[in-house]
Image 1 (cartoon, rainbow over the protein chains, first blue to last red):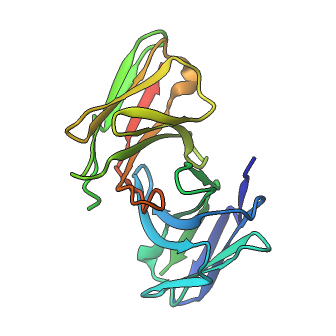
Image 2: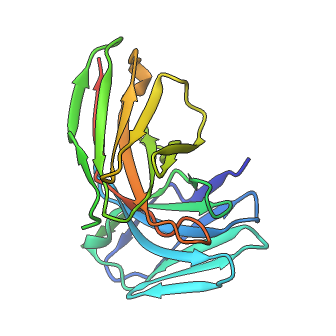
Length: 112
Length: 115
């Protein structure tokens, strides 16, 4: 059974700092991995999707990497801003039509 | 804007009642999935529908049921509500290319409180 763990559970940083969020998964046979952002009480916004054959994806100040063999992914946020404050969720898909398995998320606070 | 709309946004029910949550997906998104997110937890998969047929189910009892309609709308029904059913319920839709499910687009969710 796939399990996804996110570390740390919460993180508080000053504005402008670069930061890394970590995600690990127990079964390396994944189809893809997706990073989401969730604002309090709201739905999920997809940030980046990495297919199993890819090593990384970039979007603006965000960069996600994937090391499938070690069961790890990182989300790098450059020059953090207060508007980045949210919970970041990592989710993996085991095969093309299986559902996403989520971690519990990392709650990020960026202090102005 | 994901193009996925859920209604209602908030709902309060009492234990033992029944509830129906609704989701409207983008045209062409023939896969819809429902997730339950308890406070402080990641979303947990309830079930998935593809072209109006259930084609995957998580570890949820039969009192959780669903429907998908040809107009890309869907429903989640929960019977005999329990206090632990209090959660944010998320609907996600996706086009389904040959290789499998693509990016899933999530709605804003329905917050259900069971008293």
